Length: 77
Image (cartoon, rainbow, N blue to C red; front, side, top):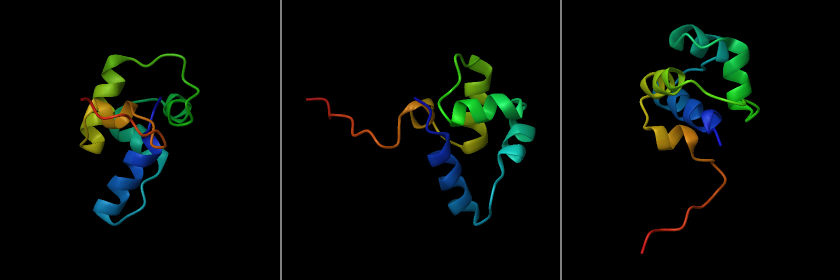
């Protein structure tokens, strides 16, 4: 469901630096435990403001955060 490892990796590559989950937590205001639960697909719910904060921080769209990295979605005809 969540694709946070992939978007985090892309930001690290773009910025040429390592980014910790603690930093993401500080910058987004999302509790560290909740952030890890989302990253590991263990979160039961996600607040809309958390999803928005993640999109802003990573500079991505909602579909980038919520689309699993290992699933090929069929193209619309």
